[in-house]
Image (cartoon, rainbow, N blue to C red; front, side, top):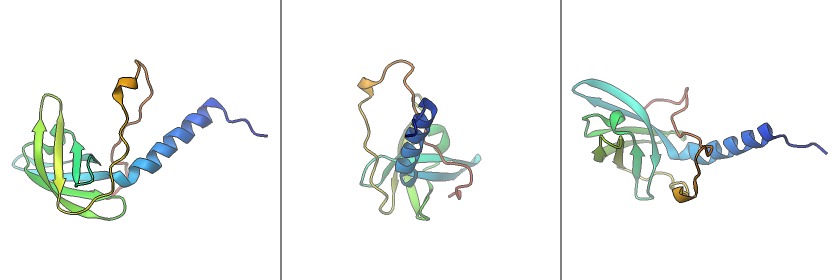
Length: 125
């Protein structure tokens, strides 16, 4: 019987998170007066809202989101807050269901986490 070591168990957990989130992460592209910006966003609601960083959106009011399955959606900036560096977008079409978000009150200092970002090699929007 093979024993699963701590590193293997960690790898399994990270792979599981990636498999769960990949369909729910979009590559984002915005064009504005200052040029072009790109980043990633995660599905926030079943109604087509995404959350991203405000610095990705910049001063833009609209952009494009490309999902791993090839779906491309136009997005409208619903709101942004530079202080928290968060922005909310609304898509013009259906998107995958959001992930099950956890309760941050259960996190402890030095808890492991995994960022959700657009992996290299994904087609940019």
